[in-house]
Length: 313
Image 1 (cartoon, rainbow, N blue to C red):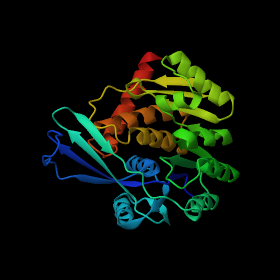
Image 2: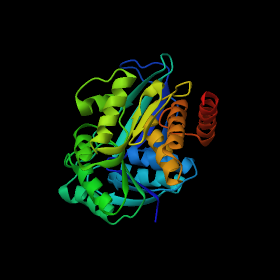
Image 3: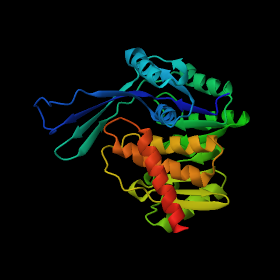
């Protein structure tokens, strides 16, 4: 039985280019282009593989891009369950402008699912036994807003802990069902409660409220350069992000989730999992374009955070 299963309803093939300047009309002479498998849960499985762990990925595949996605995943030896759907898997693009260091990200909507296709996800979860189910990424058109809530209820009936990284209405509906861990960023947290949270005190208050109301046992709030806040019933921790040279923000949130769930699957504490999660999120910033995390970067940043914690104790 796999300890970790990831769920990606709207995966993508991600391609990235570097150009000197982004200008209209002219041909943009670029680097050769780098292609990676993408989508929230797939990114989580990818980073878990880089960290030396194992997971099973459940995802859709549609058309020729979906075939390419499956072939790209072969490079990471990730176990999978593929749900075939109509249409075409997303092809997303990232363009890095060298002259300004700006990053442009193009993300199409992906295929529209039929009821039978999105119901197949609920059925796949019902047939899956694991310790942690990571639901990550956007919900494709055609699926109901409460799809993550339905999946969460099904997983909980199997004794599985659900980790949710989503936004908008699917996030709101899933929290009504109650998940083990939710990972919003600040914008998503503010949208969730309908008010701004610019100060650490307000962030902690809102996260504590979510836990106290039973919508999540753990809230992992990512705060970009300010690091992350972790709140659970018996504690709270805030960890600053390491100072790194940012090349691309693509996949930083998924990398954070991967580090956290990987640590928890190994029986490590929430506090230690937060350190690895922050290290992985920062490691994703170092890599260009759609590349995820390099193991050496994640290990180095994790050790730096551990040493910093010891020094401040």
